[in-house]
Image (cartoon, rainbow, N blue to C red; front, side):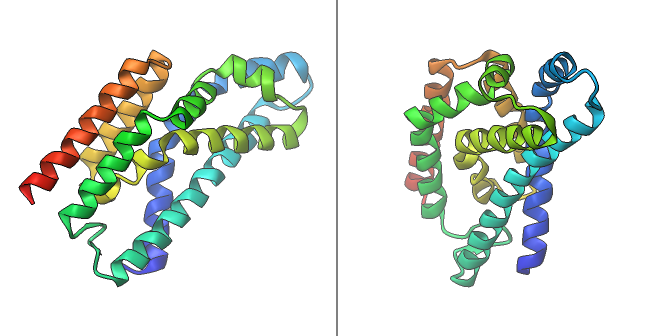
Length: 200
């Protein structure tokens, strides 16, 4: 796959998977905007917010596609997945360890509490909406980047993997920050890494 096609694929995948994660923020954002900016167009400012959010994930997708292209040049990735099980095991271990990290907990707390996020970061106008979308997107990337790279284990654009990951990320947000959930998922990923290593 060429670099341009890879970039398009990753951006489409990020938009399909992560836009649902931003939607719970929309009602709160709309309510706060209607109260603080009664003359503004809600459709416009919400559109700016979501566009800025997707810009952050598009930048992540571009970075991931460039990295994928570089790895493919070394024959480490074939057809958008790792050719060597050792790399899959390593990425699973990385994602599992990150689920236990303070950075994951820090970002997840900020990208899943709409009202608290609005109170901390809200700003007036379309510039405020864009800044809010960029900030929300940055926290979500900080929360999910390692899980997103697991596409190289299951295969990028693998529909089953995309649906499973979207569902898991939604559950993380709906249940709130639960240490047991992050640790359990981290242990599951670490266990999968061990199984792949042994099988290889």
